[in-house]
Each structure stands twice: as C-alpha cells, then as structure tokens.
Image 1 (tube, rainbow, N blue to C red):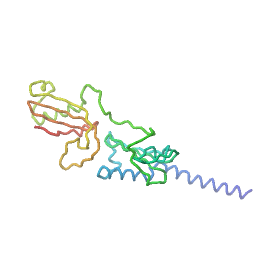
Image 2: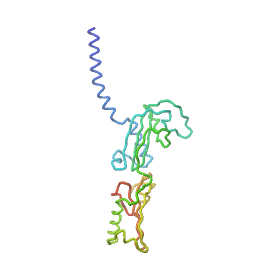
Image 3: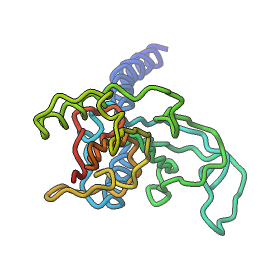
Length: 226
C-alpha cells in the first residue's frame, strides 16, 4: 500500500512539472506557421516577417481547427473530397488589407495550402470595404490639396476649381499593387490588391493625380502632374 502511494505521489509531481511546460508551448504558433509565412513571401517576391504586419491595415492570427474533410475545407481543382474530421491549423495573414488564408493538417506539414476556394465559413475577418457609401471625401484629400499648393506656391481652396478648365474629383480604388499602380523608382512592388484613394485636381488645364493607401495618410504621394 505504501509503495502504491509512493508511486502516485511521483506521478502527481511529474504531471505538475509537465503541464505548465505544455501550456506555455501552446501559446506559440506551430512550426508550420513559419512555413506559411515563408510561402507568402515567395508568392509576393520578397521576405515577409511579422514586422510587416505592424500597421493599421495588417494583422496575423492562428488557431486550431477541426476541418470537416480531407481538403481542409478548401478543395483544389480535381481533388476528391472525403468527409471526415481532420485536426489542423488555420493561419490568417491580412497584409495591407488583403487576406491570405493558410491551412494545414496536424503533424502533416506537406498538407499546407493557401486557401482561395473555401467551402466552409470556419473563419471570417473584416477587411476594408470594396466600395464606400461616403458622400464626402476622406480627410486626407486636404493633405493632397496642401501639397498641391506648396508645389504651385498658391493658396487654392476647393472653390477655386469651380472655374473653366478646372475641377477636382475623388474615388475609392483597389489598386493591383503596393505602389498603387504608379511605380516609383527605387521602391519594391508587391503584386497584391491594395485599397486606397485617388484624388484628381485639374487646375487651369493642368492635371495632378494623387494617391494614398487606405488608412495610411502618410503614404500620400503625387503620381503624376503636368
């Protein structure tokens, strides 16, 4: 009886030492998270680190998921779907407003896939709107006008564009790359959809095209001016 009690105490002590270690490890993403991040970098043509997500329109998340089939609820073309629970992970990367959904089965790193054809709503994330219902331009348009005034050495207001050969306009756009479809020398280009604004000022026949990423007013720049 004493021997049984002795071994029971040893087992309890061992569990007390092991459980905290497991709990701590569980807070870290699994190794396949880094594989997903590396794959995203290859697709975008540059190295991606977690620091790239430290901005208002980016973030990353991960979680364990019980997928409903062998395709991780994301079948590839021609892939046979077999219903049945598959334990795995889902990694969500939102980079400059664009979502990338990676999935992988537990202990099967070769199953990692970028999901572009989800069949189940197992995760949702709010992204910037595809259209804006606002009837007023965003506040950053005032920064564009201020920049134009500095260039022209004038003090224009919006009323000054209510004249012949002058006008102003704004619109929401989903640009097809990180340079907002306006390449600038010496800057890398990510070929990903980037939401933003375009402001057009025509003053006495001269056109000035400003662009800025959504929710990033410091990224405002003059694309072209003539």
